[in-house]
Length: 455
Ligand code: SF4
Ligand code: SF4
Image 1: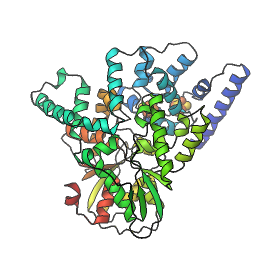
Image 2: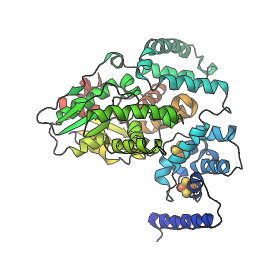
Image 3: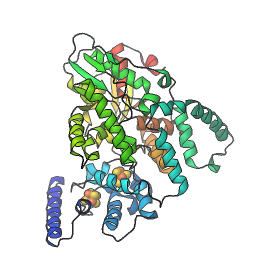
Image 4: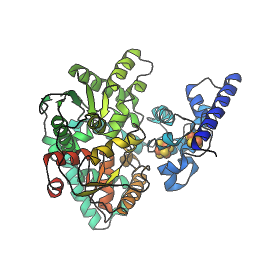
């Protein structure tokens, strides 16, 4: 019987042969070309690709994008409209990487091409201005704070536009901005943090917390739930005041210089605090911080520091899983939870069981599997602001799947997914509360009722 493992081995053989052939003919002198050649065009990745599921277009599948990149690399196609359009439409969800039996390094290929096309003059002027504005604000929490009043005011004006049925007259990114305005949390603009918070009882670990950029401003309650849970489980929590954005949003968009500057600052601030772990509750940040070395290829000093930093990075669900036996008592929560896997946790960090175990440790909590649970919700970095139509269509598809399981709430472990599913819920008639799993565990440890948790 032919199994998945047989196919994988067969593909590996094909790739070896291809690599040998290329070496013999001296065809391949580039690292990218050899990575691109690993694709044997089997199509196993197609059913997992959200943009291929949306449009059924080969050029919007991983295989099609790889062929486009190969054409550019071999000098058969320029970096022009077609290449930029189809690479921009990729959410960067990494589902194709998990599905690929040939081990194609799609993530690194995409990052390399996005760096080349990030500032391309082939982009329209409005596209370039919009990108410049977004990345001058999003990774900087102080600047995001300044946007509070304009965004809330903008949301009010937008409600009027919606009520007058004038939505179709505006580009979709107007709605995407209004969605951001809806998700603003007032605490995120005023909350401040002590530098050090002691463990409850004898300390068993010293953990640093990344408070993030978007996370800090939009999801301050998630950070507070994280700190309460860690200290209740016996961890001392250190929050370096100089930390900023980890660089994930910029790296995702091909703005590698900005990403490197931000990453250096994060590495330096946590090096000074001498912690056992650096904890994040945002899947996208964790996925990027665990692979910082790639950002510093060619700069050995920083690559070494980045690697040492990455070894300490853990998602909050990993830290909680490692803290056994648990110290804090869990109280029952009678609630049905649809758990959505963020791509940067599932594919980026191979963490499927840990968030589920965290939820399963809460008595009476019922975890409901969502159909198409390995398909992206359409949030990837700033995708919902850069590709608002595709992002909204994917969000709508996800909320339809969630609706089928009839859950009381949705839980997911990434700021982008929280924003995306909340926005899709508001567009649909099905608008369940969307929380981070750590908020449920925190509520259980504190003995809150479901009503207290949700209000
Ligand atoms: S990327 Fe991998 S799974 Fe997709 S077509 Fe290429 S070899 Fe097959
Ligand atoms: S990263 Fe996601 S959206 Fe992009 S090609 Fe792969 S599966 Fe498709």
